[in-house]
Amino acid sequence: MSRTHDHGGAIFATARRMGVPPSALMDFSASINPLGLSALARDAIGRALDSLVHYPDAGHQELKEALAHYHGLPAAHFVVANGSTELIYQLPAVLSGKRALIAAPSFSEYERALKRQQWESHHFPLSPGDGFSLDLARLEAKLAEGYDAFYLCNPGNPSGTLYPPHLVEQVCELCSAAKTFLVLDEAFMDFCEEASAKHSIIEGGNALILRSMTKFFGIPGLRLGYAMADEPLCGRLDALGVPWNVNTLALAAGTASLQDQEHNQRTRRFSDHERRYLSEQLAGFPQLRVYPSRANFLLVEIVDGMTARELAERLLPELVIIRDCATFYGLTPYFFRIAVRTRAENERLVACLGKILRKGE
Image 1 (spheres, one colour):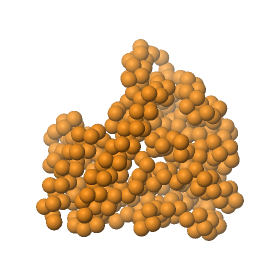
Image 2: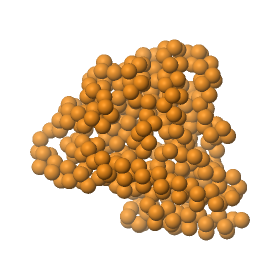
Image 3: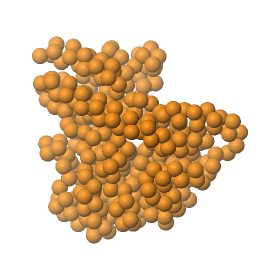
């Protein structure tokens, strides 16, 4: 029996169920760069095809050097994986202890990975009512109960809330004082790179930063992610991974993506512009509350009317997919998440919502 997932991006299964090609659907459930992969990455994939007769570079050296240049950190501070989710599942095996605290709502795979390694998972709730703010005094008191790891996503997923570097540094200090290892998931930080606390966090030695190349770089089908940490922890994670865990095309695309500064800058400008547009348009519906975001998605709450599941079902005949957020810890069935797409797609979503919500007035 196949495992079920409570994630967005199920475009192929949805297309099969509806009897339409995947290209007919507008997928707002997966938060992928609407500009797609860079031209440099596309060319690099083509050039790498002849290398498929050889095993991939098991040491990922060229990609690590590109990451070192991109982040301004030594190459020894990186470990590369088959998506950051692979690292999420490896981490509990190399960390000391068995009790973890997760800032919630957040990515469901943290808890699944911890459970697989017989860890206890506890939640540190972040409330929509106060904008998912992180109360340091409350966190300090909670950490005093004794936790071996604290998981925090920044920007938050699904909230989109960005915690500034000075606040993240304070979180890291609290974790160090409590002897709690900090797992900082920055899967969407490339959209606002200047806000990362990566340099101070890595220097502390009591934390690891997760990064995904799925979202910003637009290559989810190639499965590529990495972590930044001190050299000993990177070595332990590398040793835990299976040989040749990252394929040749992913390595080539990842290296080229990091080097395409023009595409990356254009992505940030485009995403910021379209996120503001989409947020303003959705705020015009009295039935919706739109939460501030610095990622390439928006969290929306239905304050009057149907549930998010009902809305998702009514959007499907329009060939539009959204992410029902009822499975996220701490969110009610009235929350949904939508990706920031191109202007034409965003306008189409707003028009579809207008038809549905005005009928319900």
